[in-house]
View 1 (cartoon, rainbow, N blue to C red):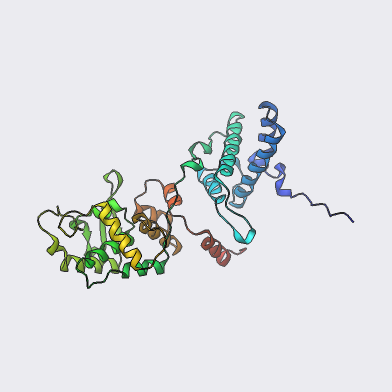
View 2 (view 1 turned 30 degrees about the vertical axis):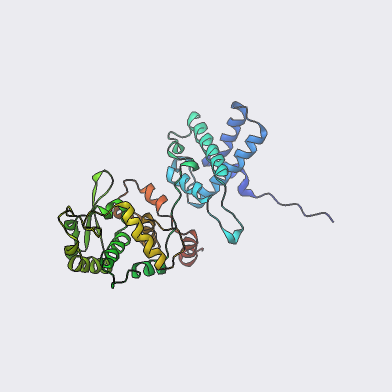
Amino acid sequence: MGRPRKLPDPERDPAQYPRLHVQTFLDVYATERGASPRTIDAYRRDVIDCARFLRAQGVERIEDVRPAHLREYLYSLKDADPERGIAPRENSTVRRRLSALRSWFRTLVAEGLVTVDPTERLDAPQRWRSLPDVLTVDEVTRLLSAPSLDERLAFRDRAMLELAYGAGLRVSEWIGLQQKDVLLEDGLVRVFGKGSKERLVPIGRSAIGAVAVYLRELRPVLERGQGKGLLFLNGQGRPLTRMGAWKILQKYVALAGIEKHVSPHTLRHSFATHLLEGGADLRAVQEMLGHADIATTQIYTHVDREYLRSVHKQYHPRG
């Protein structure tokens, strides 16, 4: 007996997506662009794959497709799914998919089937940022506990690490904090971010306590008239530099036995990721991080896909 024939997957049929105009795109591209059968076949696979993704997101009509949908699709290509035997795609594959999506929407715009091209605002993979490692909650706890209060500067170091993680600060923000910007009674820190934009970020009990101890026990001792009102000073009473902050962080990463590559940005990234994993609203995280565009937050706060899958499986009625 011969091997049984593999039945065609109906979801791979362009006719299954009439309101996404997949077949129209393929017909126009083949006849008017003179594309080779090989190119048409590749574009058929790529566009249908995206159409399947859009349908799974509840998007059935071409006019409802937004840049965020396509961005999420492209990022999904970089995710591994061990249970399904899927490895993350290479950037070259993602670039080819992006090229297919751009051809799809440019053709439909030219045909008058859609008025806006959502691919115009999409970046190619070479422009994607490589995100730092995220610390686990246990690793953060070990890191923040690493400064031994037997050492003179440990009061400063613990306060600095607690505040950097507790408020999700950029390194330039935490070394640039003024004493007057830490509102301990209100549980807030006033931050001046990119473009000198001001934001208020809540801080928790641990950060409030660590900063209060530092201000009482060590900050007056470090002040020698050169502190310029800044919260964190070095051992000579001068403003802390980026390099100084980096060296302090590396000292405690080693003491905590953390083997990941950890930079000051890792603390900010971990702050956002842990908030999202805990159920925080994306808009609230955007506000705390000081992002002008929520798309930046979606990219930057790269929540573990396995965590998302577990949430979906646990709470969705058809998970």
